Length: 283
Figure (cartoon, rainbow, N blue to C red):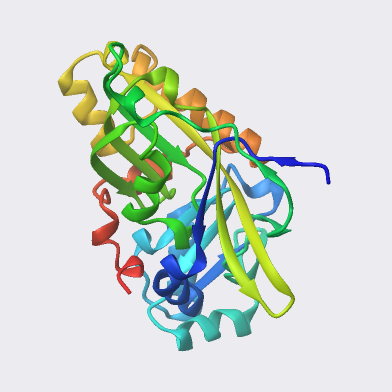
């Protein structure tokens, strides 16, 4: 059997995320963006349309960008039904189809017996190598039901020592303060979820994207604090900011989104930095 290579694959069991997955599925709706709308429609546009046309109160932090679409978390399953019965949102001249969230959305699904290869077999003792330093690791691409600290620690436990984890719901991005070697952090990695079905065992696999900022790349502590608390990508003379912006663009290009962070995203993600504060992720 030919092998399917998924670089740096981390595998978990569906049972380990069951409560979060069930909570997301009960309340989440996907708004599909047309290709031509991906650089135009933002979080606040969706919030305003939902409130004005459907009279449903929703917080902007309950709307998250996932790849080229948006995930909308509602306050109940009945509110979710209202949106799905409507079937679409009209934002300006664009029509955005609404579909229910599915925990396999955005993944590649394979039979579990498929031969998977994993090149990521690092020795844990390498974490204390002489070239280790303080790092900031940004993680892009996690679907909503995998956005929790347990998953982040599973992803990074073999390649660095995790100190602090911060979360930005607006674009489902994690920022991790860690200690390790930047040479041990891959640019592309994968996470797989094993699940039993009536037709046998399957695994759903998502690609993820890491960006690493080293101590040398941080201009100073004041700029670092500003970047981590506002996610501002617009400083042309800031190496950290420019590198962050470029990797963000590469990630969206990889996902065929071709969407850089918009000014509206910058405006509305400030202040949401911990997944424990985001109501949808508290089962």
